Length: 347
Image (cartoon, rainbow, N blue to C red; front, top):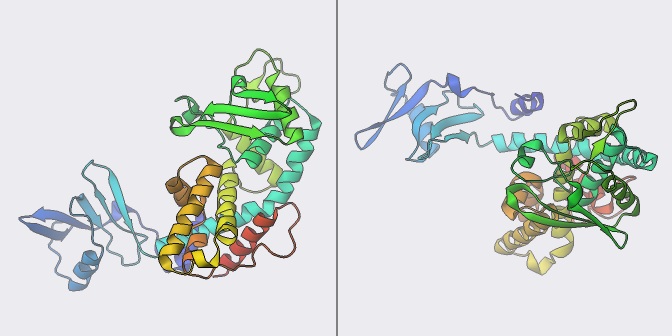
């Protein structure tokens, strides 16, 4: 288990537990259920039975196992109708996960100015070695919020930055146009206008004898190698000096866009009731999904810090987050996001 999860679990009074050690089972019994210990002994403890009842587990679950500890981070497991293992977490587990997400985004945001400087410096080298190639890929992820391009998706035809092919890139009117099929077989068209990045992409496109766009040749080597998402993440960690990854760019940009939309696109009259605020959140998630090229559901679940939505819905999202001095190496919106995260980390 992640050390930070352990730390925050303790903060919120939870104990990290292993479902393999759960000591209580629920079995169908006539028209009802029988709750017993794993040794078959029937449970008569009213407090434990009342807690299990409050979990409101789906009746269709089978092979149900219950955590004896009231503060276990997982309270129950069971298999649904399709045989998939499901988990029921403690109500406070969401607070633990959110605290870890806050820390990770803060770490990335604090490392981002230094990382961007390093990427810009490596881009100027115009090298075709691993560092120069990774810098181009990293800048593309930052500018276009693209997926890193893991090989497991490329095998199914889904492309990300590292797995792009030369045929996916066209240069026209000083712009780079990427056309490719991404994860879940979804077609994408992305235009890049940043001059230095366009020139770097064009240089790589002109390399002959390879299918992949991002390839590098180390000093003294005769054969070129493909840049992988793993190597790209290594470059990001080495360049920032922190444990960051390509996905952090997407989460940071997604959270920043959600914050921007809720603060700038939603007028007071569109947020003066709870139903209106929920509709505003739905529109914000649509905007994030368009930026990240996924669905609003995926955007909200994986790429927007949940505390941003909670703060907006509960009318406690500060209106002045994006006002004032813009921090070096960050945009106005990113500065606002950092202020929000810093405040959230103190809660």
